[in-house]
Length: 200
Length: 200
DNA sequence: ATTGTAAAAGAGCGATCGCTTGGATATCCA
DNA sequence: TGGATATCCAAGCGATCGCTCTTTTACAAT
Image (cartoon, rainbow over all chains, first blue to last red; front, side, top):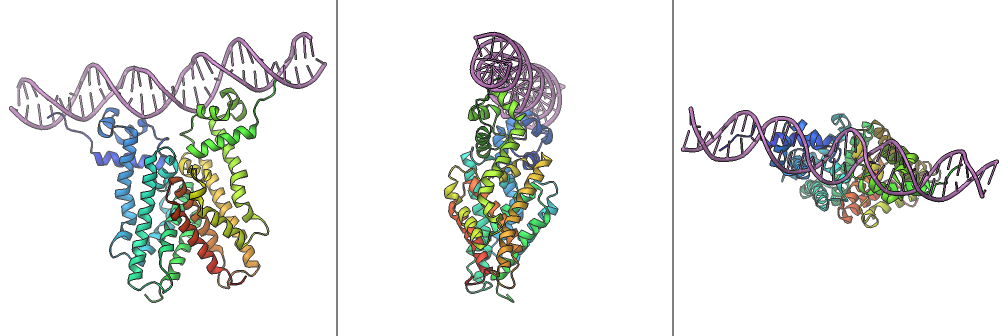
């Protein structure tokens, strides 16, 4: 039935994702993409249809792999305080981990393409809603387990933490001193401990 | 002495700033700029030198006018709790104010151009440092006036608030539901009230 | 081995990019 | 008012943009 493809869709999508992540949408040319993906222009358009569709595929892959890897634990049925601590602590060290200053692809995509594509609004809203829901789930579990102090609902923190993380993503991409990111994360962690019942 | 200019540098820089703010750097063509500025290509390059230099001029104007207008009060010698409340409350309504979803130009510039221009790192670092210093100034004044509770230094909040605001900027540009922005700002305000001595 | 078929390869499409140039025009000084 | 001079204006520069075509090549089914 004809010649077989010499590339793997997942592999080349991953490479495109990394390039978009590093440079952004407009600053990445199709020539850059074909070079990095090891695929010819014809194959790129036969496989994905357009640069914009390739970008969407890269975004989808990012959410299914990177985002899921970072926040999936918060969405689990057993997620609680420990998972929140781990996530906030991890991104407190983003200045160390993210040495090449890629930040977060979803955050970068939101700020670069917000006004033009109406679907990007859906993307951003879904992205933030998922972050919000992830923290809300973990905090809700903690509350149900009686691990939060009486007055605290956790809803406020479920709104605060995503915003803090977005700020950390921006600062990481901007090359801000890692100590500033660490301080922001530590303060968020302190707010968390303030509502956790002692000894729970 | 030759013909006089038919445009005002401040006026055309303002127009360029608004266009960059709305669309970003790469998505704004020089044709778009000359149209919006009401200036010919020759005049644009005679006045600014390059698209990149015009962008820098727009950034400078943004910091001197918009950013200064929003955060200048926090940097004043008399700034205290009231100024912090006002700023956080204002951006809690950013979903209402920023109907055309421009977000923050400095935040957008940080995420779009971070990896390419090394000077953008300086820009982002300066931008965040100024935000940090502004909140630190107001919190320091409040502490010196004995308005913070004994244990609280305010340093943690001076790191937290800029991060929360950056998150709000991203969400506003992404078209996220205004209630989410409001909730993040309210929680930040709650953290502030938690360290303010009652009746002070 | 032969043949049908789909992918690889690379030249190149029209359009637009940032930017420049030459002649027309308007303003300032003497 | 008469040059001198700097700005305006439109046309268009080479380069690159996203994308497509034709030819060549290699795999799969017979």
